[in-house]
Length: 375
Ligand SMILES: Cc1ncc(COP(=O)(O)O)c(C=O)c1O
Image (cartoon, rainbow, N blue to C red; front, side):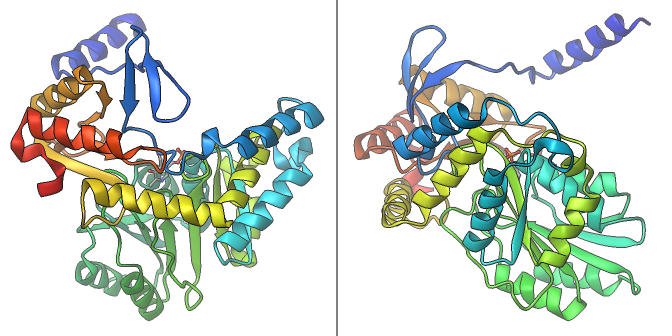
């Protein structure tokens, strides 16, 4: 079999499962944008929760960095790619996360790969929540540590797994806001268990715009984050005690062997962070919270899943919403487990009341049980 035959065989297999996907161009400035066929739609799919990718100060900072330093950084940080802007952003991210220091990575995905390649080896036990993000799963696998998966948010199960560590170094890793379910980890409980078992606690806070903001000072910890969502730019970071972040600089392969972030991305993230920490940021976060509550009154994160089960049902619902000018992605395997397909609604501070009401009415019109105000 040639490589072309093999690729055709694999392609056919994905098509047969009905799971073939292709990127769909969506040219937008904020939630409203244009599909390739010219249709204008309102997106409920972006993780740009505060709309900062469109903020004038963020755009101006990126422009200025381009003018002052050019487009690319030219090499890895440890060669000649390091810029003062990177140092500034690391300092501000550390302050934001109440940590001693932080380290930048090209993406949040690379940050998770870096954490586990640095702190885990075959003599480590990693306990990972069953609904953690793919980048955590891949980071754990690459490390060759023993990986034990605990039931979603089940601290008793986690305690049992940690109790069987047999003197090995342990890592607990959890999303704080789960990316496909939008529910929130019990961070106080995780801190308690990390303390009891002297485990390193790794929290992935990629979606934690509305909290929680846990006090991690009692335990050895790392806070993984991304500039690609709340900060509206691109890049990842890990914050924590300096002794741990310095080790990342010297050990993490996804930091060492990759080109440093561009000046424009770095400056954009710095400017976005300044907005987040200002009164304007507080208002945007309040607005985001109000927008979430307008759609689902008792929800604690900007990610609202509507579980539909079968793949066909999720695809049909997503298509019907699109026909009404609303872009809400259907989430299917391999992103979620078979039988748990869903619509994933991502709320932004930039959504208007009428856009949110249109979404709720459209869901109710497609099928009364889909009205997210009642699920
Ligand atoms: C929980 C979580 N961690 C990490 C990532 C990766 O972040 P990035 O998109 O910056 O690579 C994502 C996003 O896709 C995520 O949802």
